Length: 347
Image (cartoon, rainbow, N blue to C red):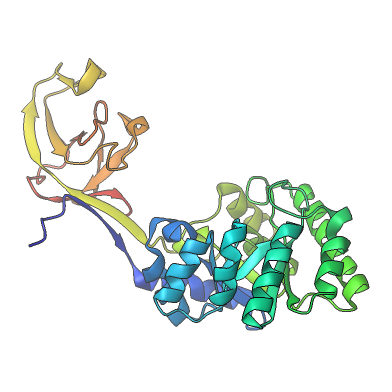
């Protein structure tokens, strides 16, 4: 018998479907849409979100590591899967066996993919990541030709994708650095054409913010992450969209986090609440105890700062968030009672 839940997460499938549809309309039918479901789909549940995204028309699924890709394949997903993080050399054979695309920026990875392709006697599509200014993963502009020449002479490797990632496109309303990255990526595409005689079939650079701001970053595939889950990448992205006269997509947050009231108590004016006596009531108050704390993920830095929703009304957190509980002031929510549902995150 399952124990009753003290705190839980709810994810709205209709919100995810709506958000994906909004980006599909923004991108158009020619551009493939990659749903970024890495890191347990930003906490929303990878398999569940991937299933909803695939049913709603996502063309690709983007993950961080081979374990995530393998879990998707084991669950029956047949969509193209792109591993954006590092795949160790001893995992390359599994990536080829499972038909998983690996983002590549080391020559050793190309060698390992070549050996795996030879073993399985199959072509191996490769996505090269170009360094354009973020200085994380990526191939320096001066070294790109070496990677392309290695692919050109390979009997098993084919260049399927050319990719990069923006450094600060969502952190500023000044997009001069992003423009420089776009220019650098354009030079990388020219290098591909000069070495291979044609461009990469799939060019992809756009994250959520880029997809919202710049049509010319859409290219052949856009990787939609944070906004798939209903969040604007930043306030700056929203402001930039308004300044540029861009249509503001209606994004619907998909996740809510909830708990229940464990106790309601009357506390006199001037009483301390919680560890450290960090909060003192300024009136006779009703304090509700919630069975969720920093062990459950409710950050200690929310102490006396955050609000929760009780019966749809804001109730401030009072005192220090404990390991397994916190306290909120429900004086202005007279109907609040034990076992009432409380919204920690969401609406």
